[in-house]
Structures are given as structure tokens and as C-alpha cells.
Image (tube, rainbow, N blue to C red; front, top):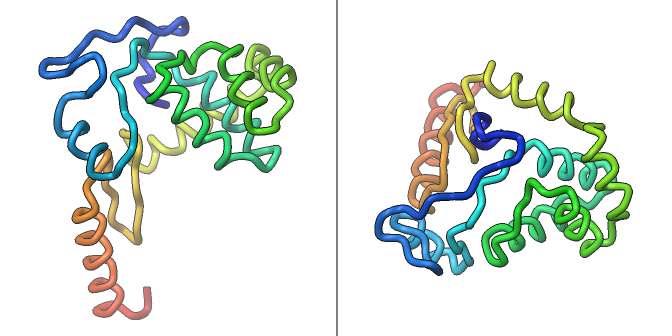
Length: 166
């Protein structure tokens, strides 16, 4: 869960130093430009439980990637509130899911315990941030430049070469 201390109703997001209405502050601004992706400063910080429940619904219906990409655009480009079940329903409908059913499942908390259990499991593995990447016994967190992934991959391959039984 992203920022689990966020109240259920979410909260208005405060601008950060060196951030404009259309651009985040560095390093995210530079990373987004380098990756050729849109990341406009969101106006609202939602409690992520509803959006994670909607993602479970999408996964269950074979539309995880489509939903994930549509939710990304809704949040980072259009600055929509991903804590609002009706917004999540619209995103689901846009990728061919039953928006009304998705909204009903989110509002009823149908997937809430599953999401909470996954969160608790991640904490048990020492995962404290989003996104987190695990490769062999190497764990790293956060939006990272390509070079970090390359170094981690090189280290993992080096570890496998020196310990072929793993």
C-alpha cells in the first residue's frame, strides 16, 4: 500500500519545492523525461486501498496490464483521484471491464482483506516502498534509472556464476 497512513478519504497534495503545475521536481522530473513518460504533479493523494482492490478485480478478469496502464494515465496525466470508486469504475470500463461491478466490489471491500494480507506479507519480507524490485537476494526500492537495474542485474549474474547451485 502506498502511504498507508493516508486517511481513507485521501488528502489534498501539497506542492513540493521546485515543482510547477505541470512538472514534478527532480529527480522524478528528469527520470520521467528520460523515460518519455508523463508524470504531472497529482492534486490529490488517495488512500491506495480502493485502487489496489480495483487492480485485484482487473487481475481476476485478465485485464491487469491494460488496467494498470489506464490507471497510470488517469493519475499522472489527467490527475484523477484513484481513491474514488467511480473513477476506478470509469478506468475499468475504458479497458473493457464491467465498471459497475468493479465499483460495487471496491465499495463493498470485496478485495480489501486480500490487499491487506499482501501488504502484510510484503512487510514480512522487508519491503517498505513502492515500487520494490527483488532479483535473487537483492532488493531495491523506488523509481530508479536504468543504470541501477543494470548494476543489480550484473551483481545477480556475478552471484550466480560464483554460486552455481543457487
